[in-house]
Length: 391
Image (cartoon, rainbow, N blue to C red; front, top):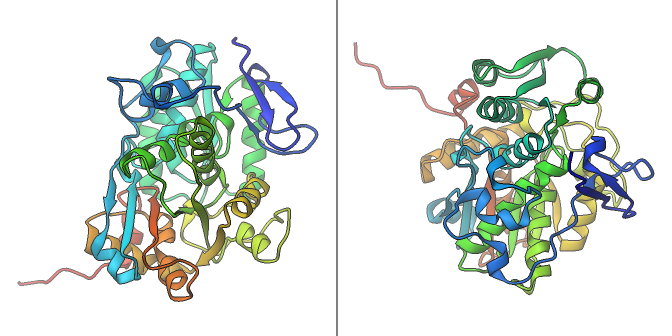
C-alpha cells in the first residue's frame, strides 16, 4: 500500500493513509492531505480531461489507470436571475450538483476515494449515510468491482434505499441514533480493512474541493463574494473552503469568499455553537427535521467549520422545514431544478440575510444545490400543487 501522508488540520501531526485512521489521536480533529506544492493554472488543470479529474494534479492518486469515474463533476453554474430577483440579489448563481451521476455532490469525493482504494488494493469501501452518500458509494463500488458496505438510519427514504440495493451494496438499516450507527460502522470497517468514506473523510474532502476550482473557472477565473452551503457533518463546506485556499496558495486568486453554513433549525449544532461564540460543537440531541441529508446531530467537522467561518468572515444560519419546502418549490418553478429539501436550505436563508443587510444585493452569491429531489418525491409532492382533473 502506498505511503500517502495525512496531517492533523489542528496540530499538524503526521499519519499514513494505510493505517486507515481518519482523526488525530491527540486532537480528535479531522486529518487532511497536505495541499500539493504546485504553481500556476497549468498545474491545476489537465488538458483533455473533464469534471473532477480535470484537476488530477491536485488529487492524491498515483496512476491514472486506477481512476474510477462515472463522469462526475463539471456541473453547471447557473445564473439564476429570476430566483435571485425573488431573494433580492442581482448576481445570484446556483452550482447544480444534482447533475452528478447519482444525483448529488457526494460523487466527487466517492470517485477519488474509490480510485485510491483500488490503487492500494483495499477489499472494499463503506460509509454511514442518510442516503446520498450510500447511493454514491454503492454505484462506484459496482463500477470498480469492489465490495460496498453501507449503514443507514431507519428514517432513510425508500427512494434512496432502492438504488443502493440495485447497485449490489450490502445495506444495513439501523433504528439507532446516528452517532451510534456511525461508530458501529467505523469499527466494522476497520476490522474488514475497508476504506471508510464517511462525510468528512480526507479523500472525500479531496474530491469535493474541486467544486471550488470549477466555480472559479466558471466565473471567469474570479471568486464569488459569498458561497452558501447546506451543512450537516461539515465535510462539504470544509472541502470547498480547502479548494479556495489552494487556489490562493497557487497564486490564482487574491481574496477568499465569505462562507455561509446553513443548517435545519431542528438539527443545528454548528449554528448554535457559532452564534454563542463557542470553539467546540456540542451534540444537538434529538433532531426534528425532514431534511434528512442535513440532520447530523453531532457533526465530526464541527470545529473545522467554526474555524473556517471565522477565518472567512462568514455566517452560520438556520432555516425551518417550511422555509425549505417553500424554497424547493420556488427553485423548481423559477429555475427548473428539482432538488431535495436539504439542498435548498442555502436558498431559503438568503432572503433574510439580504433583508437584514448581512449580504449586499449586488454581491456575487453562489448557493450549492447539493442533491436531486428525485430520490424523495413524497417530500417534493407536499410542496407542489395537485393536478387539474377532468373526468
